[in-house]
Image 1: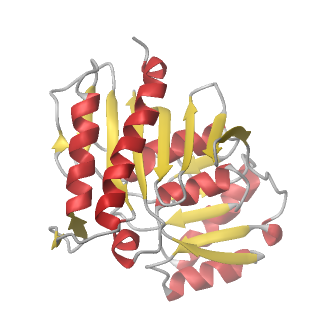
Image 2: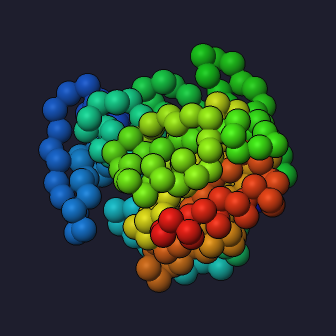
Image 3: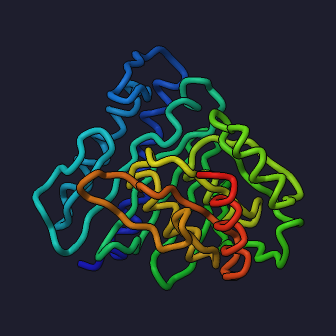
Length: 269
């Protein structure tokens, strides 16, 4: 089967995992610290088990945030699983966390599903078929704003990590406004449906599971995704990291991309 043939199955699976995370979100749960200092909760682990169990029924490999490479090498492609994107927001109860499943083949995301359990919004896309959002029982296609100048852009910045350098970058870009938000998946999806225009991460600590599903959605909505050097994102299966950060942009205009990349370089990534 083609990975797109699994779309409805993956959508339902992410919602099932999302319901499990809500059980913990509304109750008590344990929080532990991973190597590197980031938090992991019981909800992360239970969600991942649901996703892995379901995706193991397919013929593709699986890479998941907590368990790493689950299946043996599979040249036909991998499901890339983030069981709870925005764990700190889950802990802080902002509601801005998501369950994400992407499909990666030859270094290119071909499918992405992002589900935000608190708002019950689900964004999805498959390569060449456009991007969509399901909210309040209604489904609609989505597309980026494609604004022509940065001075009309709304930048989405991290709710938990916004440095002085980030502030300087936003000032040099002369963006119209800044919104603070958790979850990279929700940030990218918000840009995909035209509620914002730009986000970026300069850190080398993003996992490949943070980027795969959101990239598929944003690009199918007409946006573009780059690393902070202005290149196509590289999915490193050795380090499991997006070593050069990531930029999500609500346009495909190369001049705007180049200005953002240059500004990131000037300020110092």
